Length: 154
Image (spheres, rainbow, N blue to C red):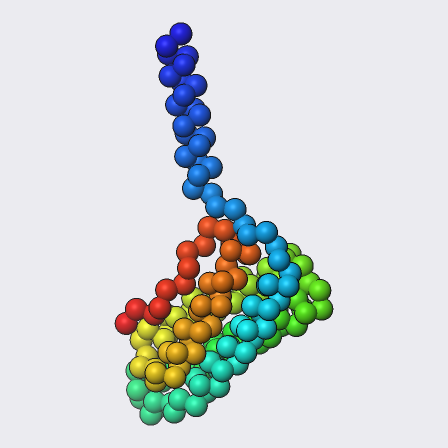
């Protein structure tokens, strides 16, 4: 009898621990997500404009390719944020916005890797921080288990 009780208790504890590690998505709030998407669209536009103003390193510089990649990645991020914002404004639901969200996170991951190796002016860092904070506010609506984006470590 004790063995059966211990087995049942162990199974119950295992189940409780397994479900405790799984966070739940935030309840879809179309108005809030749409407002955040509008803010993200503006933040990524400002970020892209700042990155585009950075003069490229000279020929032969080891940072030259990374510079142009970062410019392309911020353009892509701006376009995807605009696309998601506009589709949400037209009434898109979570499933319709999810692919844009995922695409942005992939782009952010790659851009963060490039930015880590480049010297970026303070205005670019400030604009990247603003965009990152908005992305972190959107995260609970799309991925309950995602870790918040952290500043780029140099």
